[in-house]
Image 1 (cartoon, rainbow, N blue to C red):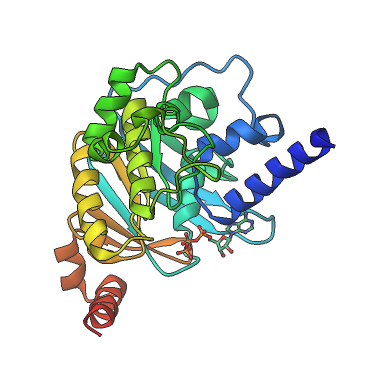
Image 2: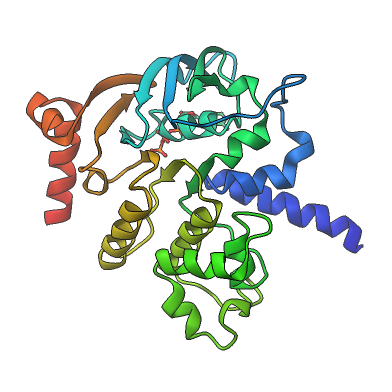
Length: 295
Ligand code: ATP
């Protein structure tokens, strides 16, 4: 019976995970590895990242044949820059993240990292170079140390502690009865939204990727915790190429460039100041969100 329930349990987790959108896709791939529809090209080399530049070139994509979601999308993220993607619900923001992680292949166009088409390199090497801080982090029923070390196989206790410290969760861990060996998850200690987010950040730091994908990483938090996490994220992403998918504009106003996506097309792009002056879609969204937060 257990053998029957285990796959069901896993399917349930995959389902919850898919529903959450852009979750820890690395985890999901580990779970459904053998079913993934995207395959490595025969003899594909590893992705080699010297300068972590990122480019979408005329990317056309739809989940279903008769419904195109991205209509020839192009943009570039220079190495070390922070680019945010905003836009109305359903515009295709999370889809961009899924394509970057090669959850799906575009129907036309290319996605390049440091000049290499991500469809032509091994998926393992691609995913190794991208760290995700997702909306909702999946925690394993294991120790908090394991949950952080999961970012990289073979991480030492020192590396885990250093990552926890940089993610500003080490003081919390040190107060736990068994420190890094404290059990968390459904059967152990429950973590708050902010603490889970810090575990996700620490996990990413252990992995030390040149590219970061932030999926509205602070959505479920109260505003004080959010500000603290944003400050940590800013530090962590300082020297990394960062793509942030955001719903609330206040969290990305300082991005080097903001891409405003509307129905799978780039409607506007520029800095926060540029976009306010342009008095277009972004300026409208900003005014609406300011009014909401004042209310
Ligand atoms: P939100 O701000 O609401 O999170 P988004 O801009 O991130 O939206 P996406 O999640 O990228 O939007 O979705 C873009 C479109 O693709 C939506 O119309 C959505 O219904 C559709 N879509 C997303 N995932 C799938 C899927 N797995 N299969 C079919 N259609 C999908």
